[in-house]
Image (cartoon, rainbow, N blue to C red; front, side):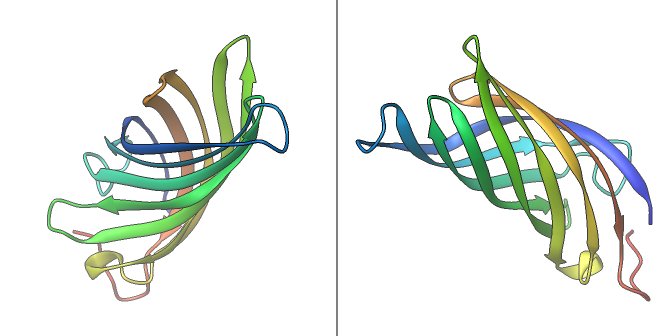
Length: 144
């Protein structure tokens, strides 16, 4: 399994916050963000990363989970899920979690793999994330 690492700076395309009234500062957040990856693995360097996730936070603390899609220049995709803990300390929001590939198309059909990531919000609509992990392509499939 190749090991790889990388980073990206994401920008929210859509972000909806619903304030609940059961507990002070309870928010449900739905967001879609996009980024271009910088990766140590040539197969993932420069891919467009789209993330759709939901967060359940009370006073800035809670969990987020969702889906990601890495789209390669030829249209092939490597897709998966993620989940993380969200913390807010002194007004700074950080995330720490795990991700895993669930499926892909084209040369990434049958991809498996997993890893960890950390991130932080740099503004209400932008984030910086770094990740590491590994992946394996289905036998007989070769990434170009």
